[in-house]
Image 1: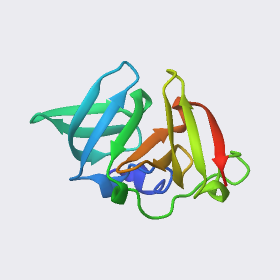
Image 2 (image 1 turned 90 degrees about the vertical axis):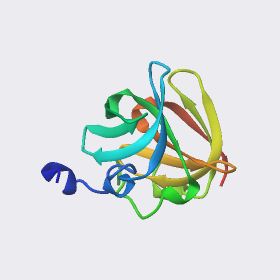
Image 3 (image 1 turned 120 degrees about the vertical axis):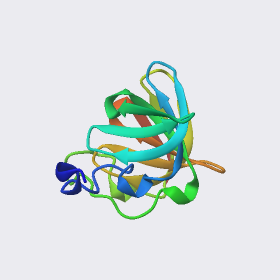
Length: 139
């Protein structure tokens, strides 16, 4: 059990509920890791990638691709800390990442450290620290 993490539940979309699930994780250096989540902590995610344990620092995650049904529950957000808050859930958005990539989708979930957007058949979880800007396309 991660003692410090349980008190901060709701600040990340990727939390202990993802343990045992499969994820596609993209790092800021261009690496794509596909694997099974073994353990989730406040600063790291432990995965099995091709039967090899891999520990990924959250600060190295560019974005994560997962199933639409994997984004669930309500997260704690950020009253007066961010403009992009729960009021924008359901809006169509375009998210520009710091590396120049852009994704469009519907905003599903907002937490203090991550946002989740729905695309046609998948969901993307994007750390706020990797976002250059978000355009609101339709409210």
